[in-house]
Image (cartoon, rainbow, N blue to C red; front, side, top):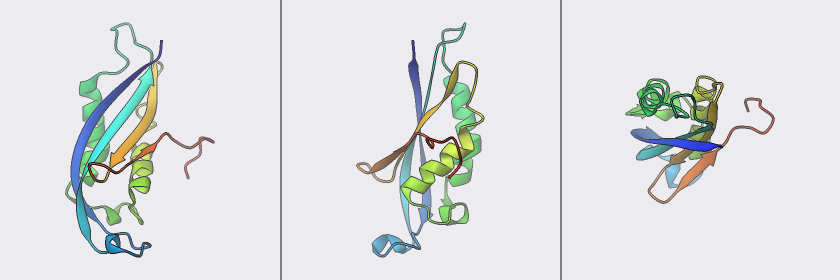
Length: 126
Protein backbone atom coordinates (compact mmCIF):
# COMPACT_ATOMS: atom_id res chain seq x y z
CA UNK A 1 0.00 0.00 0.00
CA UNK A 2 1.42 3.37 -1.04
CA UNK A 3 -0.07 6.53 0.47
CA UNK A 4 0.54 10.21 -0.35
CA UNK A 5 0.71 12.75 2.47
CA UNK A 6 0.57 16.48 1.66
CA UNK A 7 0.73 19.75 3.57
CA UNK A 8 0.14 23.23 2.17
CA UNK A 9 1.85 26.48 3.08
CA UNK A 10 1.71 30.13 2.00
CA UNK A 11 4.42 32.74 1.83
CA UNK A 12 4.72 36.29 0.52
CA UNK A 13 7.81 37.26 -1.41
CA UNK A 14 9.17 39.61 -4.05
CA UNK A 15 11.25 38.83 -7.10
CA UNK A 16 12.07 39.96 -10.58
CA UNK A 17 12.98 37.80 -13.54
CA UNK A 18 16.21 39.28 -14.83
CA UNK A 19 16.44 36.98 -17.87
CA UNK A 20 12.82 37.51 -18.92
CA UNK A 21 11.52 40.28 -21.16
CA UNK A 22 8.05 41.29 -20.10
CA UNK A 23 6.33 42.83 -17.11
CA UNK A 24 7.74 40.19 -14.73
CA UNK A 25 11.26 41.50 -15.28
CA UNK A 26 10.30 44.37 -12.98
CA UNK A 27 10.30 43.97 -9.20
CA UNK A 28 6.96 42.59 -8.00
CA UNK A 29 5.55 40.22 -5.41
CA UNK A 30 3.26 37.25 -5.01
CA UNK A 31 1.45 35.35 -2.33
CA UNK A 32 2.78 31.91 -3.17
CA UNK A 33 1.13 28.65 -2.20
CA UNK A 34 3.30 25.58 -1.64
CA UNK A 35 2.26 21.95 -1.38
CA UNK A 36 4.81 19.39 -0.18
CA UNK A 37 3.87 15.75 -0.79
CA UNK A 38 5.54 12.63 0.59
CA UNK A 39 4.77 9.07 -0.38
CA UNK A 40 5.31 5.88 1.49
CA UNK A 41 3.84 3.13 3.59
CA UNK A 42 2.31 3.61 7.03
CA UNK A 43 4.64 2.85 9.95
CA UNK A 44 3.78 0.96 13.14
CA UNK A 45 1.79 4.03 14.31
CA UNK A 46 -0.28 3.91 11.11
CA UNK A 47 1.30 7.07 9.65
CA UNK A 48 3.45 7.74 6.62
CA UNK A 49 4.70 10.95 8.27
CA UNK A 50 3.61 13.18 11.14
CA UNK A 51 1.96 16.40 9.87
CA UNK A 52 3.35 18.31 12.85
CA UNK A 53 6.91 17.28 12.00
CA UNK A 54 6.38 18.03 8.29
CA UNK A 55 5.16 21.53 9.18
CA UNK A 56 8.17 22.12 11.43
CA UNK A 57 10.70 21.03 8.82
CA UNK A 58 9.14 22.96 5.93
CA UNK A 59 8.81 26.10 8.05
CA UNK A 60 12.42 25.82 9.23
CA UNK A 61 14.03 24.91 5.89
CA UNK A 62 11.86 26.81 3.41
CA UNK A 63 9.21 29.21 4.68
CA UNK A 64 11.54 31.00 7.13
CA UNK A 65 13.89 31.74 4.22
CA UNK A 66 11.33 32.69 1.55
CA UNK A 67 8.56 34.50 3.46
CA UNK A 68 8.82 38.28 3.12
CA UNK A 69 12.08 37.95 1.22
CA UNK A 70 13.56 39.10 -2.06
CA UNK A 71 13.89 35.65 -3.65
CA UNK A 72 16.62 36.80 -6.06
CA UNK A 73 18.96 36.82 -3.04
CA UNK A 74 18.59 33.00 -2.93
CA UNK A 75 17.80 32.01 -6.52
CA UNK A 76 19.33 33.85 -9.49
CA UNK A 77 16.31 33.51 -11.82
CA UNK A 78 13.42 32.85 -9.42
CA UNK A 79 10.80 31.48 -11.77
CA UNK A 80 8.17 29.23 -10.21
CA UNK A 81 10.07 26.32 -11.80
CA UNK A 82 13.37 27.30 -10.18
CA UNK A 83 11.69 27.97 -6.84
CA UNK A 84 10.20 24.46 -6.88
CA UNK A 85 13.61 22.91 -7.61
CA UNK A 86 15.22 24.98 -4.84
CA UNK A 87 12.56 23.84 -2.36
CA UNK A 88 13.09 20.22 -3.41
CA UNK A 89 16.81 20.59 -2.74
CA UNK A 90 16.13 21.98 0.76
CA UNK A 91 13.81 19.09 1.68
CA UNK A 92 14.61 15.89 -0.22
CA UNK A 93 17.36 14.53 2.03
CA UNK A 94 15.78 15.40 5.38
CA UNK A 95 12.42 13.96 4.31
CA UNK A 96 13.89 10.61 3.24
CA UNK A 97 13.18 7.81 5.67
CA UNK A 98 12.81 4.05 5.82
CA UNK A 99 9.09 4.17 4.96
CA UNK A 100 8.73 7.50 3.14
CA UNK A 101 10.34 10.03 0.78
CA UNK A 102 9.62 13.39 -0.75
CA UNK A 103 7.41 12.77 -3.78
CA UNK A 104 6.45 16.19 -5.13
CA UNK A 105 6.76 19.92 -4.64
CA UNK A 106 4.04 22.12 -6.13
CA UNK A 107 4.37 25.94 -6.19
CA UNK A 108 1.51 28.25 -7.11
CA UNK A 109 2.58 31.72 -8.26
CA UNK A 110 -1.06 32.78 -8.64
CA UNK A 111 -4.35 31.06 -7.85
CA UNK A 112 -4.43 29.49 -11.30
CA UNK A 113 -0.77 29.08 -12.29
CA UNK A 114 1.53 26.50 -10.71
CA UNK A 115 4.45 24.18 -11.35
CA UNK A 116 5.06 20.64 -10.12
CA UNK A 117 8.50 19.16 -9.52
CA UNK A 118 9.24 15.53 -8.68
CA UNK A 119 13.03 15.55 -8.61
CA UNK A 120 15.47 14.81 -11.38
CA UNK A 121 15.30 11.46 -13.19
CA UNK A 122 19.02 10.78 -12.77
CA UNK A 123 19.19 11.59 -9.06
CA UNK A 124 21.66 14.42 -9.64
CA UNK A 125 21.15 18.04 -8.70
CA UNK A 126 20.64 20.14 -11.76
